[in-house]
Length: 62
Image 1 (spheres, rainbow, N blue to C red):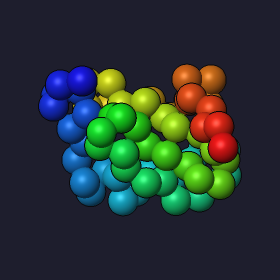
Image 2 (cartoon, one colour):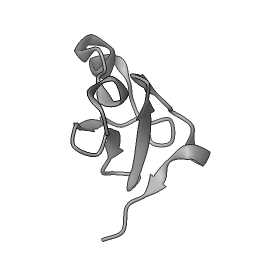
Image 3 (cartoon, helix red, strand yellow):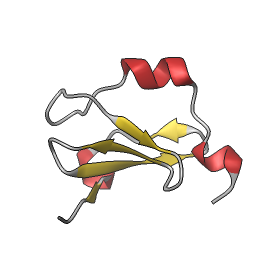
Image 4 (cartoon, one colour):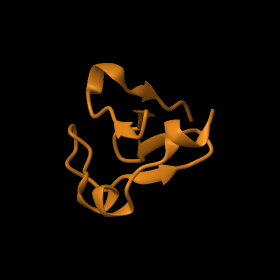
């Protein structure tokens, strides 16, 4: 994964919430994802743009 794929404006990250739970997201720079622990979903970041669609999110397995 290159840096342009995963780079996101930090101010934008402060404003985003999980569309399912409306809860806080954490940024996983290594995976290039925004993670909702509550929903157990990881939202991808493509070309620096968070894809905040539940249908695009990856389910996190325990």
